[in-house]
Length: 271
Image 1 (tube, rainbow, N blue to C red):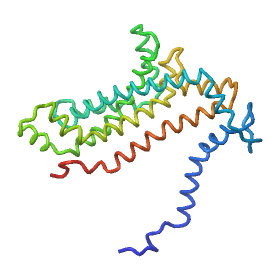
Image 2 (image 1 turned 90 degrees about the horizontal axis):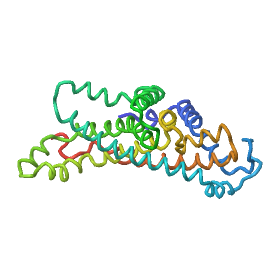
Image 3 (image 1 turned 90 degrees about the vertical axis):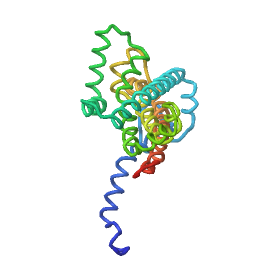
Image 4 (image 1 turned 135 degrees about the vertical axis):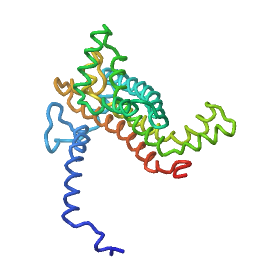
């Protein structure tokens, strides 16, 4: 058994890890600091003073609320579509054998592997050919293409860890398909679906590239932030909104982590 001394990380590795974390997270901390600055037109360091007034200003900006409401709508509907389609695809791929199964799996995960600009151009071309007007629903369709992948990956992994003997036993005991789904399948994959839905919501809420090509005149919160950075009126308001985006996306990711960290402990696993 290795001693405590040999199991400790070298000091150089600790310093490198701390430097990497600082490089990743210090810019985020700057966003929080500049949300409180008294300077309105530029980013000065250190800030000349601190104030809470920008939170009140942001609260009273109707364009912020419109963009936030649109982002929440898009993320919620995209997540629901992703949970439905992602879970059905995962069930088919994990629990059935058919010709072209691996091709189907590849086609499902392809949208998240492609650069966002490729997906955006493809969707914009498709909407133009089909003469579909740009609206909230075109944004939702664009977001659903990659949100499905997140749910699918979580669900298919959980399906593969869930023993098929549980479903067979349920059917042998007289349960119909709906009862088996409700009492056997969903309890085993429920946390995976919830975690995938949380990640899908976070991805949709802060997506920019695909939204740029599918939004038309609509402005989600990230698009609103991008426009404000180009033509700022009250620069700290953008930072206040950025703080909101960080919190809204961080909490679902944190929840998904806690839901899936014990995902290998599924009923019937290993039997």
